[in-house]
Length: 229
Image (cartoon, rainbow, N blue to C red; front, side, top):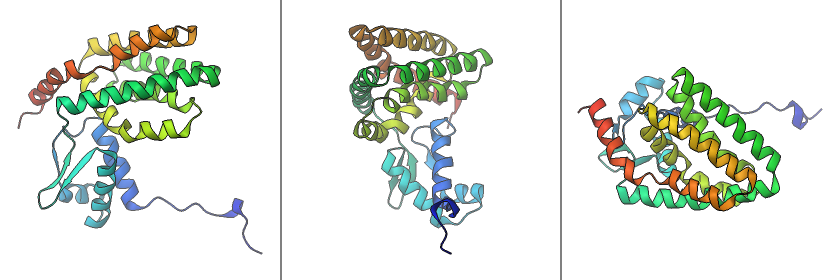
């Protein structure tokens, strides 16, 4: 008797997919610095795999903007200029504002629950001094807008830059306790404004929150001091 859909065994992810996911997380969490060379030999040894899945993983991450593959030179973590960051911030603000306003109209209860959960996780992580968990919850907070907006095209547009934004978010907030403290307040205030119907106030707060251009230089200098050479 033919096996029905419920009896089929899901195929495990490929080696390249597993390497790409692990490397993506490592870049986002700050285990690599911006512009750092990613050694294929190092990855092969770390994952116990051949060069083929490693190269496939690097090519996949190039599509997300996290990695730049330079022929005959190697693969490098993306290293945006201030102009690149400004463009990312504009892109992010435009999409997040529209997704949030759509979400509050079509799925207000889900939006409220998602934002509340993300803020609570951020608060716990900050209290525990868990920088990585804080960054993941911060990213999840902004992802709630897209999860609840009801438009898959808007979600797909955000995914084009989501990994780069998460990486820069780690760089800009993880080393600085005061930024996580003020960021927590900002996230609470944005959620309150959005859910109370203050669209103009929400947009103004989001605009200020999403403008990273003035903070990038200091963050990069801090990173270089922590990782000389």
